[in-house]
Image (cartoon, rainbow, N blue to C red; front, side, top):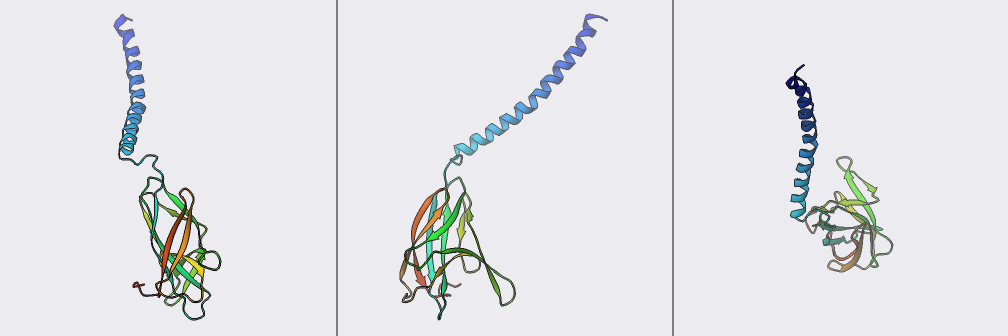
Length: 173
């Protein structure tokens, strides 16, 4: 065997080894580039930034013991957050997160929800046809009254807001 023939298997092994090492290095470089771009646009590690607007409380009808409150929650941050509970000194008792769904042509069901995710860069709009806060009705309220609420989030903590008392259907719902 000549010197040139002995070199060919060694060169082949060296080429194969370099090609095998190149694939993970290329993937790591691509991932690093993507993360660098994400960070450059301010998304990496930014905390949840929660704002609560559009608070409404339905004026109870007749002798109803409970009514509902609705809010629009916006998260302009780069991390998701979770609504854990809603409290208020303006209602007699604690609010309960509930999800309503239609079960038939003229029937609906409500289910208690432990918490709700507010996605990063997204929003959550409560409505009578989905998520709401069930609160005890308070006698003597009139349309236009303001009720203070505190929404408690897993990462953002307590966020205080006001809700206006409205008649059901007043806002098109």
